[in-house]
Length: 138
Image 1 (cartoon, helix red, strand yellow):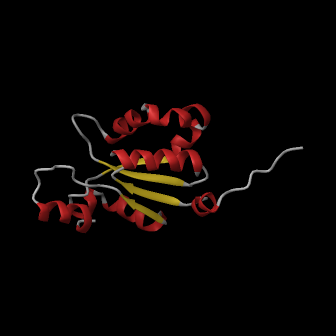
Image 2 (tube, rainbow, N blue to C red; image 1 turned 135 degrees about the vertical axis):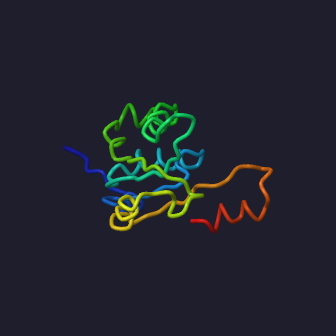
Image 3 (cartoon, rainbow, N blue to C red; image 1 turned 120 degrees about the vertical axis):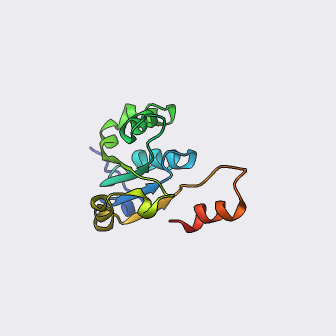
């Protein structure tokens, strides 16, 4: 007899939802991304805002993230969910997050949940600038 799994309230909430994450390449962003992919695998899509960096485009940076040990269980047990993650070229310090009009409209029309994890980690930054970037800019 097949045992039917019961979804938690959290899994039920995220089922079929489209999510947008800023700061997905940072420590907490990666932890969130892995947890959503593994535990809430029925999400529809996850858009992640990523800056190109050191001659690495956003697709390459996302691939690098998925190679980390943190994503090993997703890679081994649920590799198909990785296709739900869509990198978007942008920057929280830019006007309209540096997104194209097409991507902005896409997010406006599709996203139900936003996680704003982008933050400056420059310890030498002026407090006013750090507060503005980490809390006001978005």
